[in-house]
Length: 212
Image (cartoon, rainbow, N blue to C red; front, side):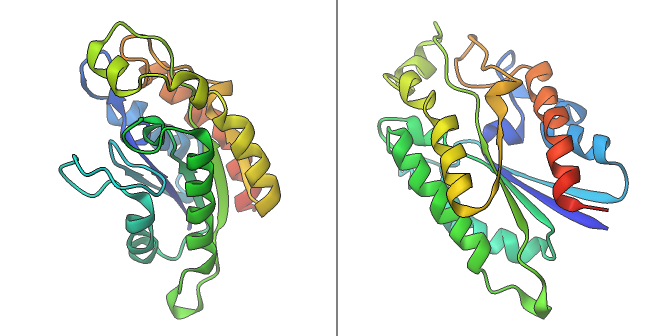
């Protein structure tokens, strides 16, 4: 059986802006991807709300730094055939990093961790998909509007920066914003249809990378 790790934030966890609550299990993009791929592939969802690429959030109730979490997660779920990373939205917060270039640097660090991890038992290094999250949008929600103040333009740069980074590092790339858009209810998260669209959109590239 092939194994795919989906490493992300609340967009992977399935935060529902209409609630706020969590989307039904079958609506979250890792679940949709698993259903598309069938029983021969184990899709592992590792989403944590507020997770960043590589930056600490000192106000959080648990560690949100993706660089600190990823090595343990890689070791816990090995052997892995593919790692899909969708992070960067929380890096846009001015109190975290606030720029798309900072998120790009964090993603590069995460790729390095996957490539250079000390996998036990001679397991191979997995393939990697860098996935850019849908850009932020305007919202009347006072909390999210303040949290991401001035970040919409920066978030719109993530797709092009991640695409170039993937080319430089020899990774696959998928632009989640090509199939889904953030909800104006909070300007950050996805409707059920949006998160389902990401799972469906990923299927062809994942099938290609996993091979027969």
